[in-house]
Amino acid sequence: MNYDWEPLGEGVWRTRLPFLDVTVGLVSGRTHALLVDSGTTLAEARGIEADVAALTARRVGHIVLTHSHFDHVLGCSWFNEAEIHCAPEVAAAMTSGRAHLREDAIRYGADADDVDQAIAAMPVPAHQVSGGDIDLGGRTVSIRRPGRGHTDHDLIVTVPGRHTVVFCGDLVEQSGDPVIDADSDLEAWPVTLEAVLAAGGEDGVFVPGHGAVVDAHFIRLQQRWLSAWSAS
Ligand SMILES: [Zn+2]
Image: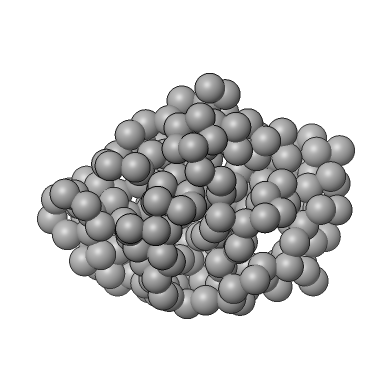
């Protein structure tokens, strides 16, 4: 195994990549595996692909990208057989916004050669979505666009089970304070988190874009923190 995979339910895992502690989620069905986000480099993605084969005996058939930030999307260039599902804003970043992706990645300390390789191989996403279901064979995962927050186009992925697993992207962060930048909508974010909470329910398992898995209580604390920040 190249990375540690934390089991979250039947056929559901996540890993925290060493670079920037970014989450990659994994859901396995009878026919395909699905990734939520894809890491930052082709080398990471190659390691993930090998781990997915070892864990699930499935190929990565689908990737959902939660938002356009480089640390979540650049690795998808490795998976040329996977169908990519993302918001139209992410598709735009991956086509006309490549220079901005590159600039951000290098500013955050990614290796320039690694970034250039990923960008050179970057696919055009097959599915520009704001919601919908993906059938993995015997199980279905749902994509939702709960509202503006960390960016103006965040998607979450919901996996039904004994406890619903919600991959939250960077709408939820645990290893540091939520990252608020020019793409964020601070006023809308707490309301958007209400929809994230509703997607998982009171006993949901919420997977942040960065950091340890959290519960509904943690999300409410983050709502309060964001509201206080917004009011200050
Ligand atoms: Zn982000």
